[in-house]
Image (cartoon, rainbow, N blue to C red; front, side):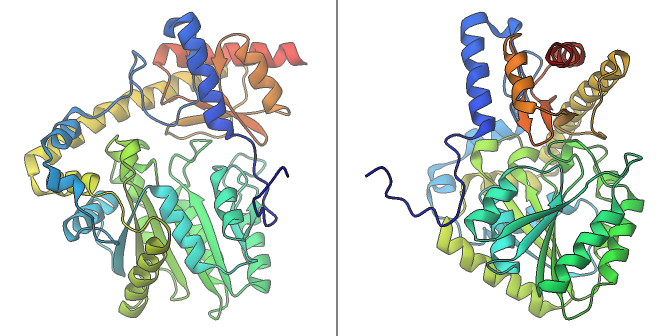
Amino acid sequence: MKSMAAYNGREIPKEDKVFAASGKALDAVSKFGPAEVINATVGALYDDEGQLLVLKSVDRVIRSLEPKDYAAYAPIAGTPGFKRAIMKAALGSYEPKSYTCAVATPGGTASIRNAVANYSCPGDRILTHSWHWAPYKTIAAELYRGIEHFEMFDDAGGFNIADFDYKVKKLTRNQEHLVIILNTPANNPTGYALTMDDWYGVKQTLDEIPLEKKIALVLDVAYIDFAGEPEEVRGFYSIIDNLRANILPIIAYSASKTFTFYGARCAAMICFAHSPEVAEEFGRINSFSSRATWSNPPRAPQEVIERIYADGDLLAEVEAERAQARKMLLARGRAFEEEAAKCGLETVPFSAGFFVTIPCKDPDRLCEKLNEKNVFLIPFDGGVRVSVAASSEDKCRRLPALIKSAMEELE
């Protein structure tokens, strides 16, 4: 007997590509030293010395916690203070016209999982863009849904609103419910952000969907606080806050990234509902799903965020530190872009964020060739992902020529 598991039609790989590549990079660092290795695999922000960057102000609050602040169970939907604070963190100065509700989740992944579970049906297809974070497919498969994607970019390199429109209308002809996942700004893996014109195009498509169809527009904004000026990158809220009653926008907001404590697993899902009944249902149904999966989200990070938003001086310190980290990250992305242009390396359209993507025909083979040069990237369908978040500006300048050289060696 070689298996006891019920696979139920799921394709389950032997290892996760991201963590496998990261493991190879760490082995190379142990053997050759950090200066000789470029580990551009990690989806976390590292400083120029290759150390995980944690905001000092946040670390200070974490260390001030007493046992009751981290050992006690948190309410299933999150502590009241956290839910108030996370609304401020996610929305900034924007004041929604809709009825809102926040539910705490252990990471943004959990927010997306709950949205798929509660706003689609088994057998449905979930719509997202062609360049997308691979676990979207994993989440859909685990919940007995499929994935449909629209081409993210048109021939001019802009957001492909025509294919988005086609796929939305195609799916809603056959499904009563449709979950759409858009990962923006600072898309993983490309770094792209929808423009305001792109958002108006999305709104126009959704306005044309029959009212009897129910659409959950899930906005994965995991990297929003490292995508540019905080208020500017939240400009699209005014558009999604004005959609018809059959469209439910859901913000999947990752506090784990914003506050640089990835392993703390802290996030929230926030809805913009047209009625108090739909907002109340959102809180109730997602709490029900939470109870059936992880039960309670971690309490410690909720306590940290509540304390930060209760102290104006502390909040200002956190925001100032984050602004410096954001400036460093944006400089790395621009450095990579500049050097890619110099050596003729094609990149997928990039705006900001943790990652840049290089299109290629054989991503696995390219990554293997780069491994020989002690360069470690993540293979995706159709390209390789470079983590500028984990690479110093100097390494970001060196990477394009190394990648271009490896591609030429494979031709």
